[in-house]
Image 1 (cartoon, rainbow, N blue to C red):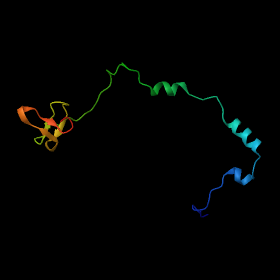
Image 2 (tube, one colour; image 1 turned 90 degrees about the vertical axis):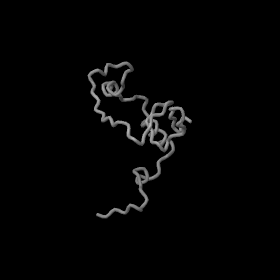
Image 3 (cartoon, rainbow, N blue to C red; image 1 turned 180 degrees about the horizontal axis):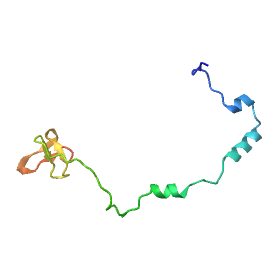
Length: 99
């Protein structure tokens, strides 16, 4: 069966007809519950505590040495491309952000 996606959508309340204002208010109050269902085991695993022991964790990082067209900023110590060099006098290489 073909579906016309341009046709306006109808939900269940439109199909059943118009409800009175009192019925709508009662239905809204019933659907809004103050009880929250939280699984404590799921939430406890998602938090990381500061100072947690990470000695068993191993990181795999590929370190690329500084290239010939790069410099290390003497202010922020980030490796930048030569096009970002703002000052190069007295051996102090500073990037455009720190200048």
